[in-house]
Image 1: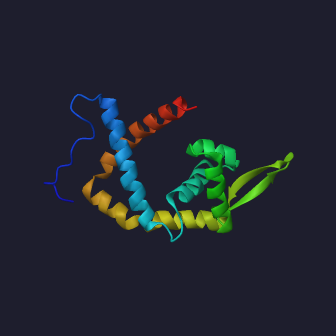
Image 2: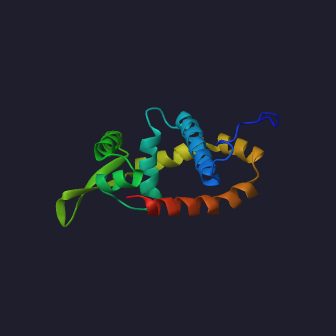
Length: 157
């Protein structure tokens, strides 16, 4: 990373600071997704990884409708994503014991391992990030980003 390269600010002069911050987050998201996609196992998308990560992070099984809401995508889009994960043996659909019409998406052991392998594959990139941005900066940033995420999550439909 070169110090002399200056990126333009996220917003225009006079834009509200909140807009500039959200624009920066959006740009970071695009850059991170593209970088992450390059390190995912062949045939896996960021959307598919996100479903695995969501279910494992929260330690839950969710319906396709619940997943669609959490990921803020249309239900048919989530059905397609889950079907692809199921075809790869990374998730399974489990019938609700009290209502067999309801099926919950559960991550298989293979899916959990693949998620962990994908995160491990990012180790070289994490090393580059750590070499250029001190760990203390990451630690200081995380609580603020968490607070923004929780607040924005509360605002959605």
